[in-house]
Image (cartoon, rainbow, N blue to C red; front, top):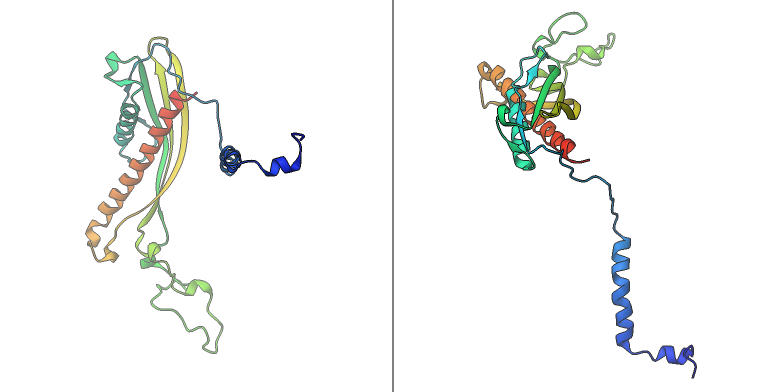
Length: 228
């Protein structure tokens, strides 16, 4: 009987069929997955084993807790572990950060001084249909509580970070971060605090936003230094 006889194929033992399925199953599983490979890998700069972080240079003319950025950079390099964090006199590399521009802007409209089209502070919404000319949209009270209490803000910064090899005086890495982050403060309208603390709450929210921004910049810069 020929090896190509259909009858012989039909009489194959079940264990042979099972073997075929075992080999085919991974192919079906992998067919449903997507993988992305890059040629990036960890590449340590030659001769550099330690790092120091210089105090942040701030020319933004905005009052910011820039020491948080300094601390975030130190924590990021310490957590990474490829370089030992030491003082500047003992370091092989130096990290420098420069806050070039920054602004903190309140979001919304202060409805305590919300004026209608006639220059009068709004007390209540006008009648929409009173037989006369209809009111214009600006005559109605704004319906955003966030605007009324100015409890939202936007923090925008432009930060440049560099890493220098102190032995060769060569630049290891440089990156500029234009970052915008929104934040929200707890105001007296919540009933939890008084309006005398509103400014303090706003400042605390600004600091939290800058800390979050600093941590993100620091972690990304560490990846920039080591991933080539």
